[in-house]
Image 1 (spheres, helix red, strand yellow):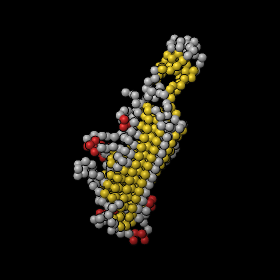
Image 2: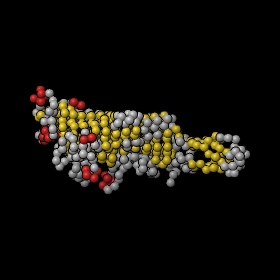
Image 3: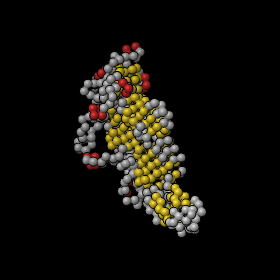
Image 4: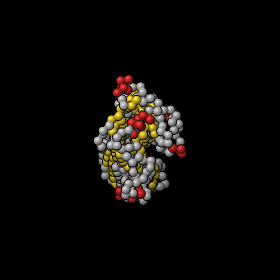
Length: 457
C-alpha cells in the first residue's frame, strides 16, 4: 500500500459495547450501515487512510444506481475489521448488490479481517439477462467504465488490491470476483454455498494464496478457484476440502482456455500461470480439475478423489505437470494442439490407484512412479485368420507391445507384433489357429522418456 496515511476513522456497529461506541468516530444505526461506512471512506483526506470497523453486526444495503454495498472508489483506502467479530451481512431482498464494490481507475486498496455474509437465500434471484455478472458477490473488483492506458493497450482496472484474512459465506454468485491488476486474495476462508466461482481472477494478473475452501454437507458451490483471461497468476498453497454430502458442481481449480483475439493478441495475453502446492481432497462430489491455459506450471499439488484433465477442449498448451501426487484420481490428457510450444511435460508425478489416459496432444513423458496405463487389453485372432488389428490408444508409436498367450493358440506355433502406428498395431500368427482361436493379453509400453503424439496428424 503506497502513500502516507494521515487518517484512521473508527466506525462502530450498532450492537457494539457502549464504551466502544463512545470511543468511535461514527456509530451505525443497525440498518443501511453501508451509508455510514461509505461516508467514512469518502471523508478520508486526499492521500487516503484507513476505515476500521469495530466488532459487531453491520447491515449492508444497496446504493441506488450502483452495484454496492460498501463502495471503495478512490485510491489508498484500507478497510479493516476485527476478524469474525466484524460481520457484514447483506440485508434481505436486494437485487444485484455486492457487499463490497471496489471500482474505478484506482490503486492501493486493502480489505482485511472481515466476516462477509452474502445472505444468498434472502436475495432477489439472479437473472443473467438482467444483471450479467455485475452484482451478487461478496467482493467485486472492477472498473465499470473500462478504457485503456495511455498507449491504448491494456484495460484500466483497479490496481494493487489485496483481500486478506476474510471469512466469506453464502453468496448468490462469487465470494471474490476480481477484474484487476495485481489483485491478491490471501489467507481467506470460504464456507457455505456459492452460485458461481468462489474466487475468479477475471483478467490481468493476480494471486490466490493460503486460502481454504470447505464445502460441508449440504453446501453447493459452482466452482472453486479459477482464472479467466488472466496472466502471470498464482494459485498456490491453498486447500479445498469437499466433505461427504458437499458438492462442487464445476471445477474445483481451473483456468479457461486462452481467448486470443483483437487487442488481446496485440498485447500478448499469455496465461503463464503457476498452480502449485495446493491440497484438494474430495470426499463428496466435484467436477474435474481443468487445466486449459497456456504454458502453465502445475507442480507439487495433492489431488485426492478428483479427476485432472489437461486440455479441454481447446487449451492445455505447453503445460508442465510436475511432482504432483494423485491418489484415487485420474489424469486425462487431451490437448488438440500440435506446434512445438504446445508440448506437455508429465514428469516426476506419483500415481496411487490413479489411471492415466492420453487421447490427444504431444506429451513428453518423464519418470512417473506408479503410472498405470490404460493401454492394455485382450485380442483374438479368428480361427481362419492370421492377424488381428488392435487399437492401442497411446496417440503415439509405442516402444513395444508385450504379448501373453491366453490359450494354446490351436494350430499356430509362432506369434509376433508388427505395423505399429500412433493408433494401432497388428498381432500375427504363422498359420490360422483353427479351434480354439488364438487369444492374447497385450500391453502397449512406453520407454519412460518417450514423446507421445508427435506423429499424429
